[in-house]
Amino acid sequence: MGTSAKTATPAPLLFGRHIVGMMILALASPYIWYDSQPVMTWTMTWIVPAGMALAAFGLFALFFTNRAKAAWPGRFFMLAWVLLGLVVAAPYLETFNKKQAQQEVGRPAALQPVAPPSQSSPAVSPNNPFSDPNYGKELLQKQ
Image (cartoon, rainbow, N blue to C red; front, side, top):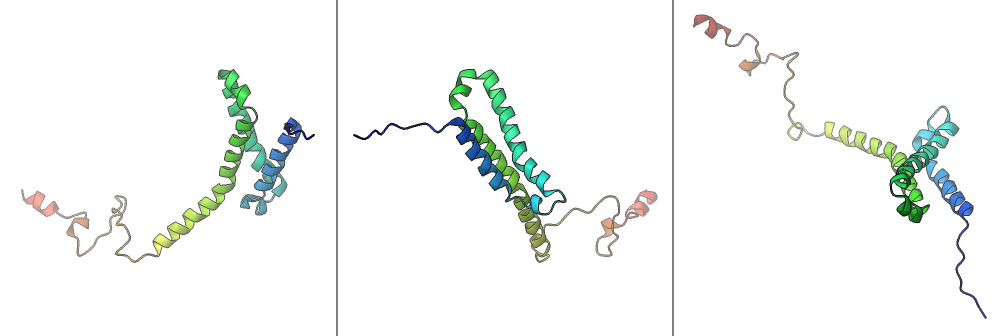
């Protein structure tokens, strides 16, 4: 005589699992390893996204009470995980963008985009008469 009734996971265990998982994921942030206060940075790495998710879910519960009750705690943790993922991924994306910019600097001159000359300090070029600030003044004075 077997029973196949599902038992729900107790809420404290559910919260504990998510928090411990978020703590572990927060260790992937390079800011923790290179900061002068790594414990404080690690703590803020997972507490701030959880706090932001709590604030957002609180606003959701304020305006959509019945829907928020039905979505608690699953949607809260989904938002907290997404925010934590963005916080952890930000340094990696920043490094990737810097490497891409450095690679573009090393491209051949024919492939690099041409930037317009700055107005503050025009460079006089013998091949470009328009770069000379005195160009055309003689013609204007004659007329």
